[in-house]
Each structure stands twice: as C-alpha cells, then as structure tokens.
Image 1: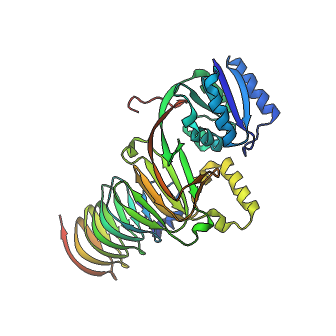
Image 2: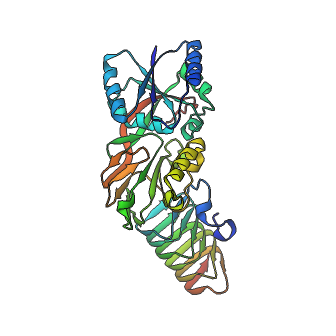
Image 3: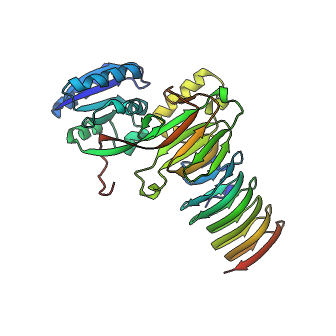
Length: 118
Length: 267
C-alpha cells in the first residue's frame, strides 16, 4: 500500500503502475478499477476499486468510494465503504457515511460521520 | 530470404565499422543475407518503404535503439501486411528487454529463428506506436492546463506537462485498460542548459529505465482510449508534430514482428 509518510513522496516511487491523481489535477467522473488508487487532487465522482484507496492530505474529494481498504486524509465529502479496513488520519476532514469491518480514527480528525462496522 | 537492414544515420546510437562488420559476419554465419540501407529522416524512410513493394524484401530489420524502432513503426502504414519487422538493438533498451534480447548477438539469433508474431499497434491520431510514445506540449502551452478525457468519461485537467502513453496490452492484468498515461513535469525545468538536455537524452538511452521514471509524477491512469486537448502543437520524442486535439487508442493496424518472447496462446 502507498503511504507517503513511510515511503516519501509518491513521485519518487519507481515504476508506479497504479492510479495516481496528483495534487495539481482536477478530475470529474467515475473510476472503476482493480488497482490501488491514490488521490491527492480535486476529485468529484464515484470510485470503485478492488484494491486499496488512499486519499492524500492535499485532496478535496466529493462523491463516493468503495474499496478493499482505505486510508483517508484531506477533505472528503463522501460515503466510504472499505471491505477490510478503513483508517481516518488526524489531518482528515470527513463528512459522510463510513462502513468497514475495521475502522480506526486518529485524534485530530474532523469528522461528521455515521460509522458502522460490517 | 532477403532481409533489409535499416539504420538511421542521425540516431544517437552510433554503429562503428567494427560493430557493423561483426553484425554482418554474424548474420552471414546464420545464413541471413543482408542489405544495409541508411536513412537520415523519416521522409527518407517513407520513400524507402514505399519502394519495397517493387522489391523482393520480405523482412525489415531496424538497427539502432528504441527511437529508431519507433520511427519505423510510425511509418508502418506504408508497409504491406506480409512484411515482417525485426529489431536489432545495438544497446540494451526498454524494448530489447521486452523482447528478451540481452545484446545484439541475441537479436541476430532471434532473427535467424524468425519467430513471427502478429502485434496490434496503437495510434496517436494517424501515427502508430508499438510500445510507448511521449508527448511534449512545449513552452507555447505555458501555464495553460491540458484536458484529458478517458473512454469512460473521466475528465481530468492537468498542468502543462510531458505525457507518456504506454501500451500494456501484453500484460494480461491490463487487458481491459491497456494504455497507461503518465503525466510528469518537464525534466528540463531542473536542467538549465541544452548540454544538460543532451546529457539527459544520452543517459536515457544508456539507461532506459530513467526515461520511464519521471521526476515529478502528476498523473498515472489506465484506460482503453484517451482524448487530449491542448492549446499548442504537440511534439513527440522524435520531434514529430501533432494537432492540438489528439486521440490515443488501439488501432486496426497489425504488424508481423520477430521476437524471442515466448508466444502466448490467447494473445
């Protein structure tokens, strides 16, 4: 899984073949994928992946997410479903419904959510 | 069987007399009779290819590096479907790795074995590519953003950057979305002089992996087709010009390629 804090900036990753939407990108539409996805820009739409999704701290996301697992930072206004695990970081502002087997929320996160475990 | 060898005299990969002699001797040993032809421009290559119809050549081999290979592929619309294409890379390159050719001797063996496989080409507007193509929107695009649209209707606005499109068709994982777009900031922004640009090009040829690893990644995405809209004329890595609106996707054109790569039944 991509984790900026542990591995440095994603741009330093060698031969990255997943989906990456950087902080300078504005995207509108839907993504359906079997790959890991990292979003650090402005995004509006539905994201469905069987892989992991990571929303970066620069992201501003509006829509809905369905993934195997999710790590959330940035500003998110979305319903998020993650089959295995869902982690809300301390720098995340999230509004919506979150559903996962395992949910963890770091101190400092600004949340306005309805959470349920499967 | 007559093989015609094409060499780009302006290629960054030079073939000295000794190497040339070694290649010819090796080919002779493998009973491949050769005819070396030099070209110095894409236009000249197009003329050579057009003339092939009147000759008995059934195999064209490009000698050089990946840029030279891509120049030939770009002109493949001028080739008859029964002409087979081979690649004799004189240095280790990205495509040579893909073909599992460790050196030029390996390539000669592959040419002698003549395993021919049909490959579908991808296209940028009306120009073909096999492996990948890089587009540069240059300074005239300045601070204006580029718009990228996928076949699924995802619309992305990205800053002026270099775009690389890679054909991942042979990777079964990506068969539904075979083209990967990678957008990255211009390497030249970090290298002030023309000398540095030349150095980076040479470095990219000597170590092709560097070429595939952008300095600052902006976007990475897979799709079946892409449409690009820009404000400026677009140039590819060998300096060919394209219009401001581009379509990138699978073409109906196929080529017959000599390759050492093990054949797969379902491709």
